[in-house]
Each structure stands twice: as C-alpha cells, then as structure tokens.
Length: 241
Image (cartoon, rainbow, N blue to C red; front, side, top):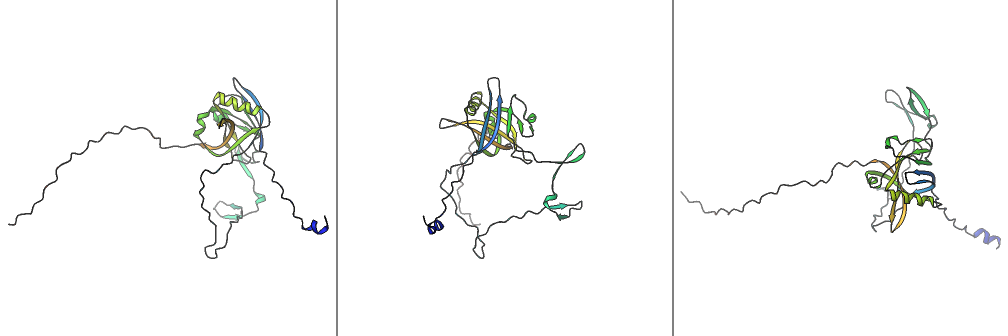
C-alpha cells in the first residue's frame, strides 16, 4: 500500500462496546434457601408495540431554523431577606443537622451489596455505607409499588438462577433500600417472572407505594320503576265568545 492509499484510507468503524451491567453482591437466606451470588443489572429496553409516531422538528417559527436548549447552571446564595447573590459552585457543600449542630456530609455511595436474612418491617431496612439490609414481600404486592425504572438482573454462574427459582418457589420478592449515589434513595423490589416459559429476574426502583383513591366497588343500585305511558291530550279550537 503506497503513501496516497494510506492517506486516503478511511478508518474502520469501531464497534461500540456493549454495557456489561453494574455489579452487586446479593445474599438471601430463608428457612429453605441460602444463596449468595454476584449479580449484574442493566436498565431494561422496550420493543415498540404500535407503529405510530409523530415526526416533528423544533424550529424557530420566524426563521424556520432548528433550535436546541442549552442549560447554564448558576448557583446563588440566599440571605435572610430572600435576596439572591451568585457564588462559585466550588463553595457549595452538603450539611445535615446532627445533635443540634450543622455537620458537613458526603454523598451516599452506590449500593453494591444487599443482604436479606430475616423478615422485617420495611421501616427497619437500612443502608450502611454500600450495604443494604432488606426483607421480603409476597410477589403479588409488587403491583402496589410505583416503579420509576426497571432493570434486568443476570449473573455469570448458576447461583443467580438458583436465587430466582427459590423466590419463585417461595412466592416472594426481595425489597430493600437502594441508591445510585447521592441522596436519592429508592425502594427496590427484586422478583422473578416468566416470559414464554423462560425464567427472568427483574429489579424495579420504586418511588413509593401507589396512591389509589377510587376503588371500583360493586354498589347495589335501586331499580327505577318505569314511568307509565299516558295518553296525549287532544287539542281543540277554543270556542269564540
């Protein structure tokens, strides 16, 4: 290959590396099961069900040119009177009141270990550093929680399948606190499902329990009696006086 060929040759397209999933250690112990496994999880994807879409473009209605949004982050300090003063973001930190004193705190690290060793109330489930303590709920109760996102769970050995089979047999889902880091904590549920006969394990990150205000209860309605059909009055010309 001569120099001109080398200069004109286009670089081959690099294949994008597939995300291998986040890792987490999971331990589950019940009266009939004891499993410790390393799991991986990644956000589930969806296949569109309807071939319907609205192809639109965001344009400036005066020039008909494309537009895009650019966000600029400005940090302001708020004084006692409510006045705002811009400050450098490097001065901002997080504080928590502990024993009456403001203490500077760090963000929570991402949860990378879960242990469910005994049944306990959800209020007793906690996170210490990177490890979460959880409990179990009956699988049908999952529908009571409102998911923000759902993740597929898998592993690199048979212990993950053993965990899914145990949860399916016992009819329970794992429930535990979970965070990706920062200060937002989700209520996570991990449970088995079957699709086309294949066993899968899912983890949903829930914002909380659904608030449903309008149950569709069966109420006895009193049957209304039909109005009798009466004869129409006959009209006649009024007699002249």
